[in-house]
Length: 96
Image (tube, rainbow, N blue to C red; front, side, top):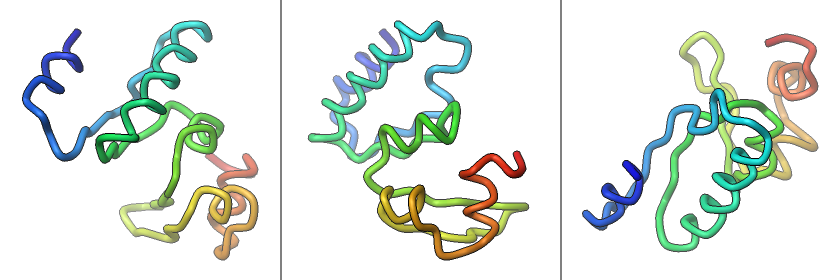
């Protein structure tokens, strides 16, 4: 409901911080499907609930560590073939 009110204002960018935190898998899927539709018309910047969620949703992704932007790129590059070892360690679950 809050997102619907925000969209009525016709924003250029939608900022989301863990929008599915605490939701069950069915509700998470519903939110993710809505985001897939919304990103056709809006720029969405999101801090995801998990790395897997970011890989499912993102067109582009960035990885930050200790306040430093380590890597940014398209999602397939970031999640399948990251350039920085720290990014690879994070997306493969070696830490975090």
